[in-house]
Image (cartoon, rainbow, N blue to C red):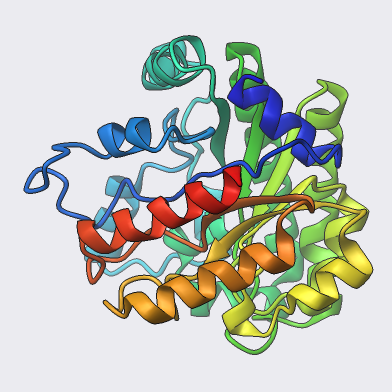
Length: 321
């Protein structure tokens, strides 16, 4: 079975004969100093089933925004509304995606998912996360207009990616802190979810999968994730109170988990006995379910290449047993 078929069947809940394997390893680690020289060589050795693509145009000209900040201008929602978004249809901006699709999908037949903007996270950089959350409470009308504009841009970005041939749109929108949502559930429902639903509708209409990256404890948001229609959730962060038992008992028929190898508690601590114990425990719980083995976030620079090899030697063995 080709990797993209294996992943597609897993997402659809068809329980194929082995667990798909992937990992966020592209950043933080010193690949040039390793025997591999690049993260793609590591991916090839372990025959990763997925590829996480990055590229395309950016929403805002952050150099222009930083210049305003340097000159003493506070970037409020009102000011941001006067700053136009970058063009989304310059196909020259998608050349990197085309190259990655040729490398991963055409040559290696992997399932390719592309990083896309959320609604909340996309505005944290220009506004600053604290000012953003204050504005959600004090300036809901202006924030609604910013979210509406962001959504229209995101939809066109996603459709351009779909036309290029990606298998899944992967929306990054962190809503969780370590113990709870960053904002109230009514704010999520009223200010964020309606725009995610608009994006989801267009992706699903095109016949593509849709995934959500959302760090932290998002227990209060799971019903909204289901309502939106996400097919995959990453990372389902056990270290932030997201129980695998809850997933298996309540949500395993609703969506797939991408995750299982925690960079906050398991990978990067040079404790191979604990690493082995945790990987084996997670496989015992999730193997055969709607689950794709992956890191919970990018492997951190505290992780050695040797430790990463140990983790993936074991993961491949368990995935294919």
